[in-house]
Amino acid sequence: MSIKFLWTFLVVVFIGLQYRLWVGERSLAEASSLKSLIDLKKAEIEIQKKQNLELQYHVQALKDDPQAIEEEAREAHGLVKPDEILILIPDE
Image 1 (tube, helix red, strand yellow):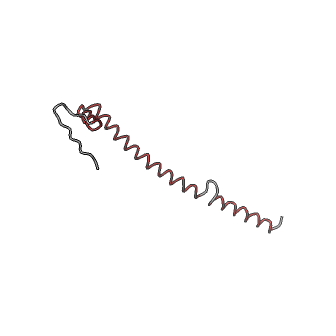
Image 2 (cartoon, one colour):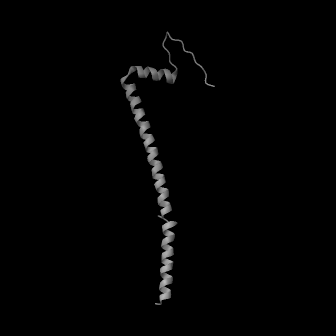
Image 3 (spheres, one colour):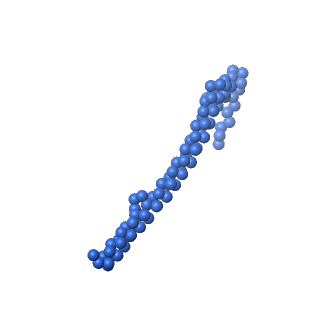
């Protein structure tokens, strides 16, 4: 085996490894992209956790407080008591 062949072989292997490191499958670019996606999903999960907590508080209030049920009925369905007058102001 000649030295020239050995050097050529080593250069080709080095170039192949560099390609895979920077561009190929499981490359640094792909790892960076996946890290960004993971960060985005973590942020979405935090938002969902906050929304779930708010909904749990709302459900608990509806279970425990009759006034909360009345308020919900008034807002959602426009319900009024017999001695009340409802005045609706349309949104523009």
